[in-house]
Amino acid sequence: MGGYLGVVLLDQVSKRYGRGPWVLRDLTLEVSGLTVLSGANGTGKSTLLKIAAGVLRPTSGRVERPASVGYVPERFPSDVKMSASSYLAHMGRVRGTEVGDVLERLGFVGSMTAPMSELSKGNTQKVALAQALAASDVLVLDEPWTGLDPSAAAELVSLLEGRTALVSDHEGHLASATRVDLAGGHVTIELSRVSAPDALEVLEGVRSVQARGSSVRVVVAPERSDQVLAEALRLGCSVRSVR
Amino acid sequence: MIALVRYLAVDVLRGQRYLAPLLVFLGVMGMLFASDAGQPLEAYSGSSALLYPIAAWMAVVVATSEDVVRREITVVNAGGWPRVLTAAALVAVMFAMAMAVLAAVWPVVTNPHPYTAGEFFVGLAAHTGCALLGVGVGLLFARPVLDSIGRTVLAVFSVVVLTYPLGRATPLGWVLDALGHNRVSLSLLGTAAVGVALVAAAVVAGVRRA
Image (cartoon, rainbow over all chains, first blue to last red; front, side, top):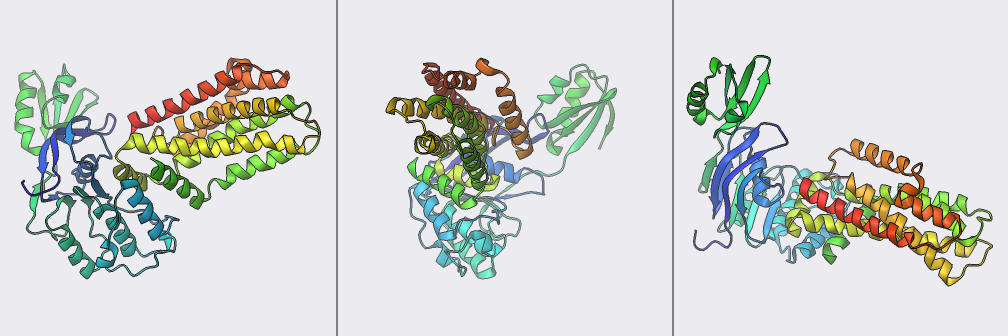
């Protein structure tokens, strides 16, 4: 980890929205250098990136991050009335740093003074990247190659070299980066004779517990399904099905 | 913080959604003071009652000027939700205060009754209190406290409409009662204090909800 300016540490991080299913459960991750998040749709990549950037608070767990974080969301809005130059100048002042020559390096060719709503998707993405890459410590990028032409995509790869960045990347642009795979899929266990659903809910790997008539449906991360099943039997539950 | 306030204010002005509450405010002010509006303090009661819902509307415009995704970027660049929500509250208060000053000056220029400096400052205090109340109510029900603009509009509208019949039971009623009876009252400061407390509560609620 030496040599990198910033390190992001996620310690036992879990996240659920309201009373919904667990999106992340007990995730521990140290990001130093280039780290790529992979996993199927809906496995919590964007949620994890938002937690790492400081947009979302985890439901439980601890996050440590340096002061200067740059963030690119999955989809930058297309209806911004402000011009690119105005937006970047404002974001630079808010952050207290200069945006630099990132736009030129990415090959931005649109009007800097027209409203961003008039820019192409690729150019809008370049503006989003420019405001984030001004961050000095850590970058958190959600599908940053979206809409970029091949030369801009290659330039982005070179811009990320030597930096600490947590990146969601479906397209394999960062072959040499550390990869973190968020386990996809789940196992659904249907139980009856459940006297203490709360005891199931707190088990590691359990994403949701829902009562359905006389039975209870437990959604579990695949790697923890055996342990949850054993604990359910120990609690006196009957197993109706496992899918 | 200054850079953040400036950015959010520019974003509101570029978005032009502020025009609707501003034009309604100017239009109703024009109607209120088209003819003799009565004694100086009494004349202020109509514009004070008007400023409360207009300030709430303007606060919702300020709070929702950035869409959710752009707000997330701003939060990261600014260093967290507390700074961004505090800055947004300051912008909403600035817009509301500009209207409060305009509302206090308007009858001084158009009303046939002469105004003393004291009456002007009482009017300014009354409008400030009503504006702060409106900003507090608007922010308390806007994003990120309530995520849906439909719920925000319904909640703000309901609270604003319910405030008037409650009369002196509300801080707005304290102001309108004092002005309607042409008297100066310490309750004007109480209204402003409740308004400040509401704005602060809205920021805290937003930070907790975000």
